Length: 89
Figure: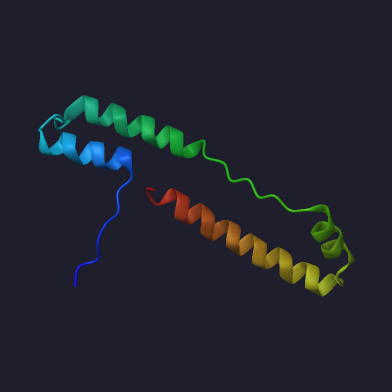
């Protein structure tokens, strides 16, 4: 059984426009210019993580070994997020 796709209003409008041939394919210099603009936007992406004061204070009170483990986990997660965002999303 095929899974039903749910589209939001904007996506529905795009699909209908494609069916009416309102979109045209882009090639050559125009395509390169658009790809460069998207790549520049991707470089400027930021990720903001909010942590409340109580959690920060609790982390500061942890023993040194737990702190280093937490930092290593955070660093690994950060690296994985950077890879995920840089893979063309």
